[in-house]
Image (cartoon, rainbow, N blue to C red; front, side, top):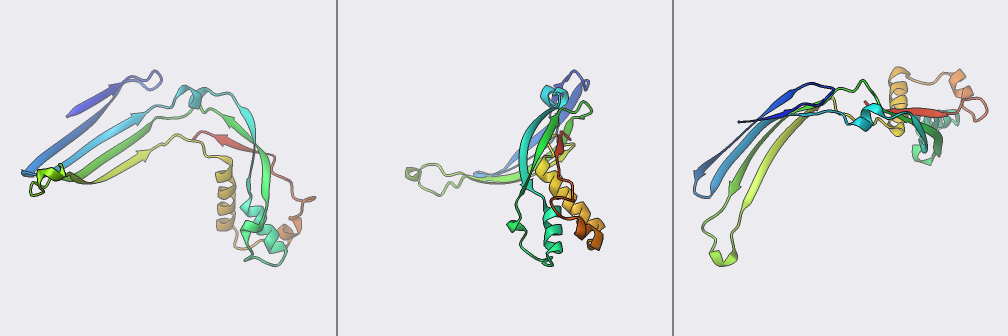
Length: 184
């Protein structure tokens, strides 16, 4: 058994175990497996970056579907809609918590002895692994925000009202100016 220890300044002392084993069933056949836990503290940039802006563009699925609905073609091709331009506001998140994981592997190693040595040594392996991560730190991103807006809208609303359809036009419906891209 191996215990890995770390002392990230903002998260205290952390110890995470790892256990691995192998068994040679017969000559040339080995079963192996492991189990471990992991930990990763957010880095300084992810926690402390001051807000800055970048330009971006993505397809706005909600507005696109609304335009198709307004045109009387609710099952039209969303790919025909153009992109929406916006500013991406990026900043660190001082409230981030560390990522954790639980991992396990199982596998077999075959080294057949019946193959003549003039062909070289043959090793065949097959492994299965499972990695369960919690609290993954990453940027949600503006394109994902637009997809989420569309998904929430489609779950909450069965169909757009006549008023909503009437509001979908370049001079009435407010444009998206900025989307936050916070680390979550």
